[in-house]
Length: 487
Image 1 (cartoon, rainbow, N blue to C red):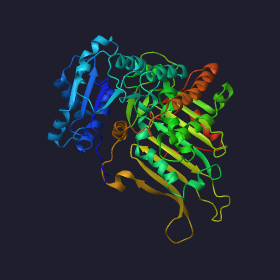
Image 2 (cartoon, helix red, strand yellow):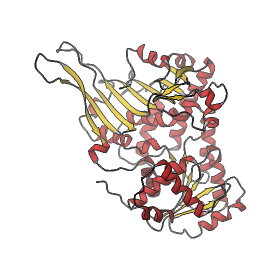
Image 3 (cartoon, rainbow, N blue to C red):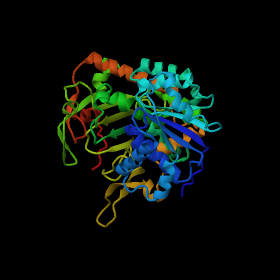
Image 4 (cartoon, one colour):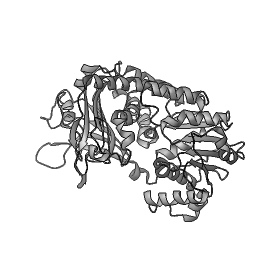
């Protein structure tokens, strides 16, 4: 049974409190931490948004949203109501001048001695403005903290502008750049798997690993985010942050400790070794796709162009053959893939090992694979070659050793936002991105975006409900490999 240790009392201000992220993820995460006794009674959660609400109507919005997105999750109605008593609302236009912040100043006037956190669940274009207003109004105390949602900018220049603007108010030790993938159990277990098991680390290199696959597949389309998504695309939305973070954790060297800067310093080394693309490399080793109409789980799904109401050259799918140029990984390709309107919702890392040099069994052996499933059902599978039971000769079958977190540990474990929010309160930066990480990732992504622009051309179409365009399969087939797409 997991032990939940209470955090210090805090005041948490959520900007963009009526938005989708806040209602679907942040407030449910805080509710679950409260139900498990991790949030002290003196803590307050203050929602800030432009909506014409008061505290009571805001509490009702949170309650109704939780019932919609997680029906039946709150079985202890008295405790859920108790949680809502810790929630307040302040109507505020975050772009308004400092004089308009009087309501927020009044709300925080009684918070002395508590950890103060500002969570910016807003568009990145507001990050610097909000930080400046917090400084002008005196709300940004010397020990307060700020949380920035991804994406941090849309390219290196805008990321630097955000980092400079926010950094003028909050130093690096008080800036938490959140990527919820880093809070997932399987992602954290990757470090434990590698560095707490002598069985694993000695074979974690080019000597025994053939290649690595990282897939983040979504069934959904743009879901009302068309204006944002069409200006971003799959590379900016998923690869530059989520997928590169996963790649770093697969490829990094052992840090000296679990100290935040020790881990993040090793991730920077990986990003620095990640080979950049020129136009020729991008044409050979990357695929851009966009979904057309099709069937997802038997239901009709419209084309991307129909969803946003116009033709567009924005990619909704990307496949990349990436390379990490260092001694451990030279010659080991990292195949990265993400897309919307694919056949199933699935995020996983596949470590495929090399074939045995000689078969003494007459063939039949498949490669060993270590599959780390991030969603929807977190777990670890190690595929081994075993003798199939029965008489009549020796037959080999590739079968998994299966560790499902839900089945093995038998309890509900906190989701990513629950863990990360509590780490912010504790001041633990280990699972958050440092400024130079963000900028190194954008440096790599910008080079690929420039290469695509130089090459020109439209994304290749793929049917909604498929695993992406045929060119994605060809990218692997040319190397004698195939995507891991289990039935």
